[in-house]
Length: 313
Image 1: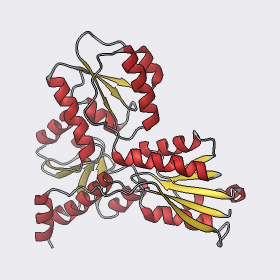
Image 2: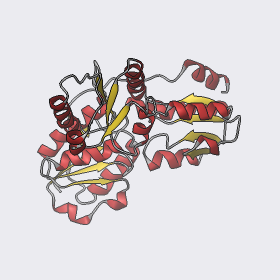
Image 3: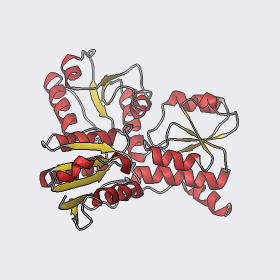
């Protein structure tokens, strides 16, 4: 290895940073145990670090003792889950990414207007389940282009909404098919794929052009991390998704230029550890950053939660 190129932007997006800060503040206010419905973000390092501090992650709010505090993860939940939490008298703190909340509101608005919705997303993904729960009788999941070609819809108004962490290019292919088949299809005023997903995919495209191999640091659970690997591989370079330094392979040392990026829920400390392992191939390798766009998006936690945490010291 002669050169190591780091993609920018990479790593934490505003929604992930927001969700992590919400859990931090909730721990200060309510102490442990603190219950979180689903992994707060799809990253094992983040989850394990919170578990060490007394956070308990559950998949079903019925597992939480009545009257406890629950944090909803960045991926969002369906109205049915909110009703279950209310029935157990749980105190809800919502860490849903505001960009996911935007899609929920779009779905609810289309449903009120009598639309059938085509939801472009990954079957079984927690974000998809939450959004589709806004109008389960009016939403049809489209997981791939084959399903876009085959789907049948009832007569009447038709719209589309999208999971926020998908491949920009794949969504466009799916939308092209749906627009061809259903010319009356309505789309949201602003696209649903989040800015961070778009920016990171744009960055990894440029990275793949400049490198002989691309390493994406992220969890196998992470939709956006998997999409980054797929985008890099689409440019004809070997691309790997790893989460720990011991996953770095010795044979990678034969590649002259290695690129590194990371998913939106990956801590920078994990990236640094993997970069350190890669530099063991050649400690004198040139290290560069490939900057494609500057990001300045931030989401502030609820004011009342900040005030309570300040009061708690």
